[in-house]
Image: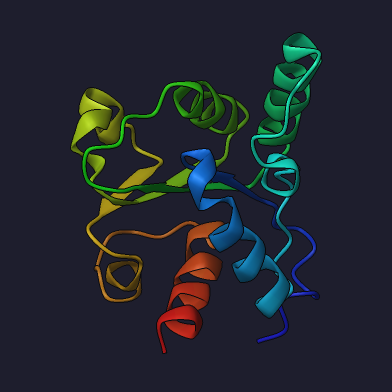
Length: 143
């Protein structure tokens, strides 16, 4: 499957900043249309947090899907707002890792939670077009 041809899908990556290099690697290795510019700036000193948040939420609101990762013991803070921006504009969220802290957000009809990314390739849940596309991505990444 040609990822660059899938221009109607836009991925917003959500995680702690320590995972930015993983998202960059995934984007660069597979030409995935990631719209999260925060992954390129990392935790550099930010002089205007207001502008930073406006940009992050604007990018998230244009995404087809949020791809969310939570390592054990991590808790999302800003990531919850980013997931909300994706969902409020009709997108979906694929959450993998330690997703228990999402609590009731995990019950949202367009949120899918799994332990590992590969689980998205085999789970029988009904799948929207962006989810099917990301399931194919998960197969490719975990192959």
